[in-house]
Every structure is written in C-alpha cells, then in structure tokens.
Length: 276
Ligand SMILES: [Zn+2]
Image 1 (cartoon, rainbow, N blue to C red):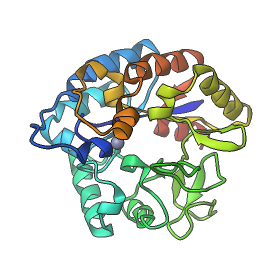
Image 2 (cartoon, rainbow, N blue to C red; image 1 turned 90 degrees about the vertical axis):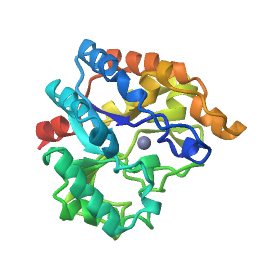
Image 3 (cartoon, rainbow, N blue to C red; image 1 turned 180 degrees about the vertical axis):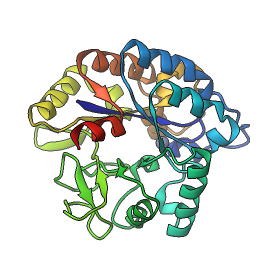
C-alpha cells in the first residue's frame, strides 16, 4: 500500500509563481476543479490526503465538506502557503490553531510548502507535537535545486526536531519521506511535481515496485493545479521558473492516473490505522 497526498492550493500559491505576481487579482480558480478531482479518485477507488492551504477553507468552507464526505483526509499545508523559513515557531503554532478550528480538529498531518522542512526549520516538528499531530510528510531525502536533506531513511520513521534525519524511538511524529529513486550514481526525488511530469513513466513504475518489494510505502504527491491544468492561468516567468512550473503540465494527470491504475494508494491516516 502506497500514499497519495494532494497538495491542494491555488494557482498563485507555488513559490516560483508568488515571486513574479504583479497586480493579478487572486481569484480562486483551481478550487473550482474539486469535483473533477473527487470524481477521478472515486473512479480509481482511491482515498487521498488533501494537504490544503488554510485560506482556501476560509473562503470556501464547502470544499472541506466535499473532501471529507468522500472519505478522504485533510492535512495542513500552512494558512497562506508560506515556506517554513518565512514563519516562526509562534506564527506556525498560531496557524495550526486557526486551521484546527477551521477543520474541527480533523487534521493530524502536515506537509510544508515547497518541502521547506530542514535543519533550520525543524522547530515545526515541536509545534506539531504540541498540537497533537501524528505525522509529517515534508522531507525529500535527497538534496536538489529547491529542497531536500541528505537523510538515509527512506521509509516512515519517528522524527524529532533535534535531528530530523534519523529515527528516534521516542519521537511522537511519524515522518513519511517522499519517494526517491537511484538513477545511475545519484538519488533523485521522483515523488511528484516536475519529476513526475518530466521523467519516463517506466522509471516511476520501477521506483514504486522497488519500494513495494522492500515493504516501504511509496509516498507521492500531486498539486491540485496539476490535476486541473485547464484552470491554471499562465503567468510570465523567467525561463528556469517557467520550465519547472509549466513543463509538461498536462502530463501530470494522466501519469498519476496510470500510477493509480497499476498500484494501490491510500490516505495517510488510513495507512497508519492499518499498520498500527
Ligand atoms: Zn504547496
């Protein structure tokens, strides 16, 4: 059994886009794709965890009901999609409490925007503990252009703020690192995003099969805007940012669809309940 997280955010949330926004009105567009996304999951008989940006629920509370009534889970993806580096312990703690109210205490999992959990932002783990969270899925165990730490733990482990790279028997928070694959002499992050769109599908299948053989859940992610690219406005970005954000954007949905048809995926809480 593998894990599917949907990072549910608006078109203006990705970090690479935020920097280049000028006077565009921040209309909610992607959120209108919720029914298509839920239909797709229903057809694939798959439950997912929606790591949702809190301000979306503030303006459209009905989104939360739709997700929950289909049996999916909601997790926290900060209130405004700020990277942890731009928050502090206190701000983050406040956001957790706000989100807790918005979701009537239903959220027990966290995903940091742009996988921004690292050695300098690991105070977030302490805040999750204090707020009775049970898991986090914010680490990519490989260093890359935008994110990552050099951890060797590939499967779920108990994480602590003092050392986020290794298992602590007494850690309260379960960490689910994102899927990686060994590619020649390098380990590459292939759990979603740009890599999901750019790499050959065969490579993704092989990586998931390898994890399954080792009895490690493959933890994958997809952005809401990759599932409804037809609703994604195109913002003028410099070449590198444009490539990372929009390259093959229409391929993410069919790719993930073929993965769900070949392998079994579920939400984090359902997975934890089964393996406890
Ligand atoms: Zn995000």
